[in-house]
Image (cartoon, rainbow, N blue to C red; front, top):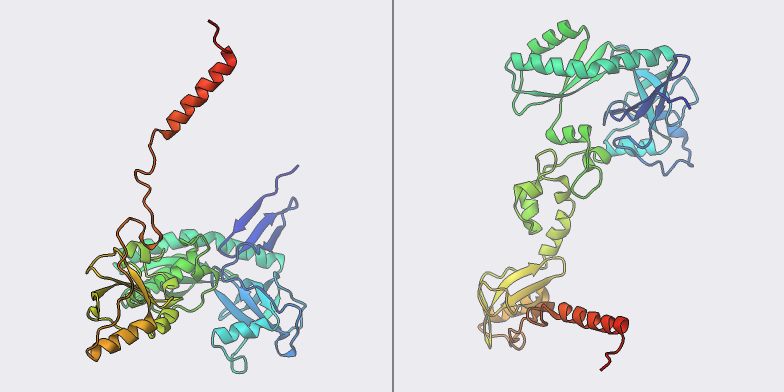
Amino acid sequence: MEEKNIQHDCSRGCQVERTHMGDLQCTMDYSCSKLATFDWMEEFRDVQCDNLFEVRFKNTHKGFFKNDSDIFLKIGDIVAVEATTGHDIGFISLAGPLVLKQMKRHKINPETYEFKKIYRKAKLLDLEKWQEAIAREHQVMIRSRQIAASEGLQMKIGDVEFQGDGTKAIFYYIADERVDFRRLIKLFASEFGIRIEMRQFGARQEAGLIGGLGVCGQELCCSRWMADFTSVTTQAARIQDLSLNPQKLAGQCSKLKCCIDYETSVYMDAHKEIPAVNRPIETEDGPVYLVKTDVLKGVMWFSYEEDSMINMIPVHSARVKEMILANNQGKKVPPLQEKPKNNGEQNGFRSAAGEESITRFDSKNKNKRKKNNRRKNGPKTS
């Protein structure tokens, strides 16, 4: 069998193959598509969005375009689309009513948005120019980093995306401070002979462009579905009683993980039902001290010993409110429960130390060996 020369371009989610006749074939790889959207409205039609399509370019770069030529298009087709100068090449990643849903998600009004046009399905010549431009991206990125370093600019060029016709490139960069790159653009234009567009993005966007797996074992949220990034603070971790360990809270972008913010609102609502215990609660058996709180269950654990987790007693938050109110009125509350004995079996935990001998397995093995020897050798004769 002939081995097919297939190249996988995960940054654009496509497969590139040269036929035995030398022709170039490009197909969309559905298993490698960042910010992919499952078209659960595929069977529905809407006249308002019949000619609207979402087109994917490199990594998470997508755009919305209109088919004014009434060409039959479907998801996976490679198309030549209108650009600021010239044309670009991309894959149709979404069609139908779900396009309007995506536009709403990105806060785009379809009635006022100026859609760019889809010119045609990409021809063989378009694909050849496209692949030639893609082949230049890595070398241009390395050289651009060298030029930026020689100019002493405090910036990092994270990615370079060439336009489909090879006449323009987008340089994605990260910078903590404002950068004056007017001279840098002139150097890039003279060095590479193309139009230059500088586009700033943050560390979270960079992680989305590169991709990877999170500690949960799944693909990073920023490259799988997240389009908007909100600020994540350590306050969100404190609300959830998470350990403030930077190594555990930081993601691959060296920023706080976006998933920390997912359950913050739930914890904030649950905290409203938890009373503030600023001092010991006086009971008839003596003061009890708050040890820990299960926010989601609404259970607070108390102990008769200060700063100790021995003999903890669970009390519901509603009962704790009544206890605090009684103390404020100068009354002592009844005992929480009888003081349990410290027998090592508190809170469902049991110690097995000293329960059985460590040599119990050896004795059983010896007995088995004796029985086996007797069977083999038979009974002793006098």
